Length: 128
Image (tube, rainbow, N blue to C red; front, side, top):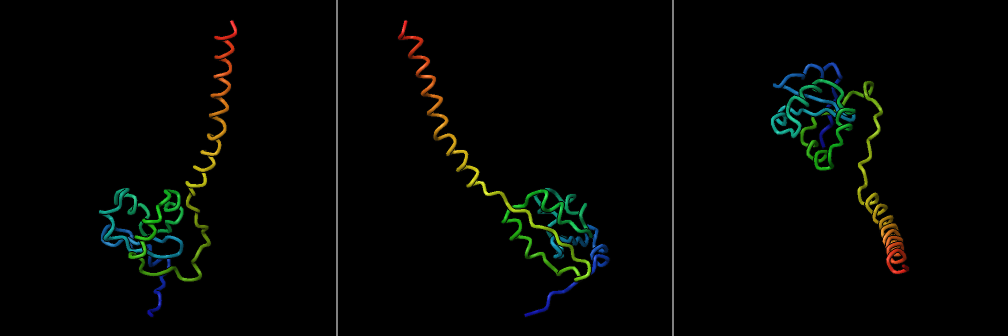
């Protein structure tokens, strides 16, 4: 098993052009030069972060698990130990839980409202 290469931020900083584009995400270094033309957000987005720590920008966009899996093939190394930062990984939203909560609310609110409307209509039309 080969050892992971380590680089300093100064070394990463020198790779900030469209000919050599490196970015740092969660202390891992990625060479995204070949991915520039394929990036869904356009190459400008990657070039803006080229040669820099891009974890916050990466997480703010909310990349999918597929995107996170895809980026593994672009990893060229890691930051040297002394320059690493603790950056919490943002948890991806659990849409299933939120949807279940919403459905549970609808399961008793909607029938309740329909029952009240039916009662009001019945009393208004049939008690005269």
